[in-house]
Amino acid sequence: MMKNLSLVLNLVLLAAVGYLYYHQFSGSTGKKASKAEGKFSSSDSNGTRSAIAYVELDSLNENITYIREKRKELETEQRNIETEWENGYKGLQAAKDNFLKKGASITQEDAEKFQNQLIEQQQQIDGKKQTLSQKLSEKSFTIMDDIQKQLKEFLAEYNKDKKFIYILTTGSGQDYMAYKDPTFNITGDVIKGMNEKMKMPAK
Image (cartoon, rainbow, N blue to C red):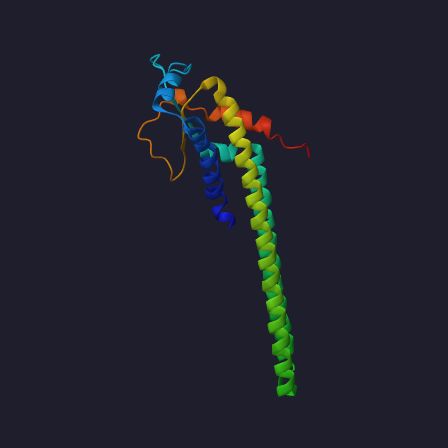
């Protein structure tokens, strides 16, 4: 699950950034949009006003401290679940090896009883892993929902002055822009603002 965490976070950030498009255009007419275009304070290197900015999602994932720390936390918990599960199976294997050392003294009744115990213990180990993994999945989605909410709030506040109509996203496997004018790369602003907004407590 954790190997896909960065992709999931990217999708969460993508949804949050896309919120601005909905926020600006929901219920708006073309006339209103045209009126808004006259208010843009952002301009490119040629002095031409623009309604577009973009954010690099990979940079957000790597440079927003809260996201980075939460990703590490989730990955650590996932490794702990896997380790506990593997140790449980090692214990079963050790118990099986010890039982087989009895050799010819093992009766049919003993073998059946031990096999049933082994199956029951295996089910308990697998069940615990499933329960812990489900809880971790729920925790990860709670964290992602919070990130999305915080990013939406930040972008809405940030865009009050910038007045972009579109804020596009770029990132691994999601970069569909053939050309990007770095003048309109607002990633640094978003990283700085989100790190302030979601400041991690001192350890």
